[in-house]
Image 1 (cartoon, rainbow, N blue to C red):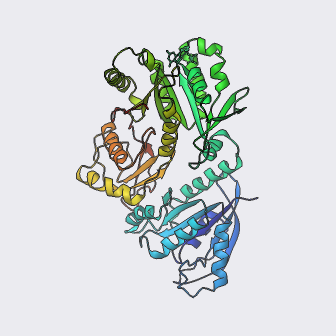
Image 2 (image 1 turned 90 degrees about the vertical axis):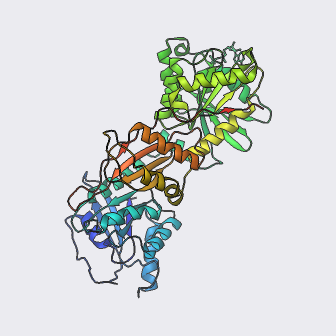
Image 3 (image 1 turned 90 degrees about the horizontal axis):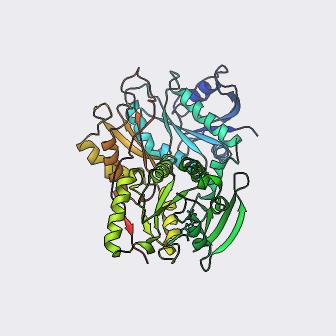
Length: 478
Ligand code: GDP
């Protein structure tokens, strides 16, 4: 089956012009008359890399039905949207977001279609404001284009290309990870990692041995690996490569560097990392390498201070001290909850899975664009954030452009990475607005064209919000 891209939007936003641009050579007439309607057009289009896809132009789609469009034509357009692999929702950036655009967005959303927004006519004076407004439609990707002047059309093609390769490589492990935990009831994959002898096997045994846990062993994703699946409080958890942890493989006993490698593999397979520490030995360099691997791969993180039964001193004081050590030694983990536990006595173990589930949920959390701009609007206006080179950014708009891990995009007057302290400031505000505990947060900057001639899509760059932030929380034991 050919990959199907459907162009939709209210009348006169430039759908036909974009259709013709994407088709390239085979140009047809572009209608300019207001209210001009056509039937659904279909053609074969090709990407710059020669791959072929089916392109559909729903020329007559007026979601509000105010234009005199025959019902049959509208129905055809809706059917096209329902059958789309990707909808390119075109809006007129020079006109801003109008009710018709919202209605078209609603139609795409109701059809459950993967949708990107093409904010067209950005060559016009009011175009760049409108492009920023287009985020309001609530889709994670907005591209400023000028179909008439062939600006930004390559970005649309890149977005199409990315989907085509993703759909042709079904079954790769990252996709499975996404599917497995797409909602709260789905499986949560956990990677138990930590230095040799901190108590990983003991922790796994304690988790699997709990009453009411229903356990089964299933093949893991890599050769010879075995995962354990358990059900707790109505949720499925998959402990990645338990056999490898229990086997005490040579890498476990060997140089530390090798055990970081095996930990990395497990981390990649997971949604949430359980980093086991020996609460009596403190934190080693290897622990910090593992915490940073969890951060870099965008995974959730729960810290477990194991062997707490051996901490021979008054609980409260020792707990504070340990938390302080963790904060100092694990700068990539300040967002992570810290549990004090004992795999031997079972203390604190009951909280491990519930905490991991909460972190998995936080990692998939989304905040609405409205809420985001409500909490960030004023702080960013009052004190425009500095970039790495010390320039002030004028931020027009903020949108959450991804989850797992939550990713926020600042649309600003230039695309330059934030100074780390500014990334931290913004991250702290976002973390106050909603519970992202245990999950890393990404902040990226997108530049917006300021003049007719400047490039529309600035490069996307990551902020560096990974320094020390808020204090790690010590979770009270039960
Ligand atoms: P792994 O190498 O990380 O899998 O560590 P193990 O689970 O094999 O544990 C190493 C040693 O620490 C074993 O002798 C365990 O019995 C012991 N151990 C594990 N957890 C605890 C704990 O919470 N308290 C105490 N006192 N000992 C523990």
